[in-house]
Image 1 (spheres, rainbow, N blue to C red):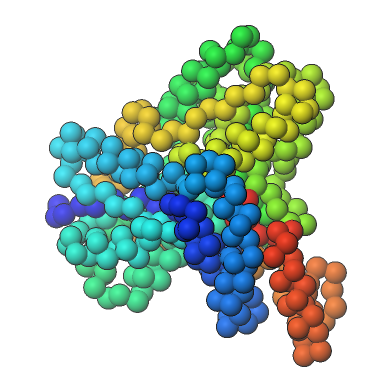
Image 2 (cartoon, rainbow, N blue to C red):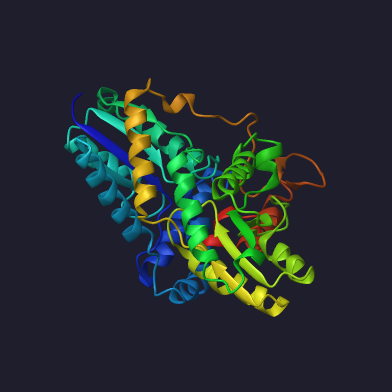
Length: 387
């Protein structure tokens, strides 16, 4: 079979407060986060935004211990997966490739080359596919393969999404059941699934399957749990004036409280590791909203992290991928329509209600408006919710 590797893909996060600004710079340097009409603006704009927003973001990370735990948790997941595969007789080396912080995807690929890996499973740690998560990493990998002829010797396969995997669903159901038992009246608990949101145009214009997969995943988890609980699906981390997938988490919490809900269990459905969106956004911001709205018992299901059933599910997916026909990066779901991701308005010539006017007379005015929108945090930036 040759030397086999597994590349786990994730977003990444600053290890300490001193890493926040460079992490933000990497984030905003990505043209999939902010697409500008002039490419030469990307780096200076990223420097400006990251410098301006660093203090606010550092405060958010200070609230959860001074940095993101994502790297440590992902490393623990990689170690557990490698050990589990080896126990099954699979000699596999597991690597980590982060999109915006160390260890970067490029670093992982360099190590894979040094280790002379011959077969590789590309495995995003996002259960559901989105053009802004798995899709972004896949596009980077495709670029690396195109630029480095030596990578052609590696036989690889891609796992685009895996939310239907029975072991994953069972692990989620077990964690939910454990948290339900902590409530004084478990049967009265309302299950609140909170997924990271994306702009609505991703789904309606670009054909992103994310919403469909999140809804399907929620239904499958409820089916696996097999308990008659009322449940709600909402989307968190919305920013900016454009419309995102609804309902919004903060609005849905308030509405449930107004309807008389007293016991709420939040299930972070699109996350498999603890990070800023679970530890700070849900545990601090949304908890405060819930308690102020009248919800008396607010709890959250922990992220899967290294849950043994979850690790076994990952191992099963790897073995299945190795035994199935290979799936190439070029075969992964593409956009049905080419749309600019961030900000959401299209660049058009002439005056329209949904476009910035970029012509010789008003280009600078439009740029200043964009800068203000980004700097103040009120612009349509998908990932500002994690900063």
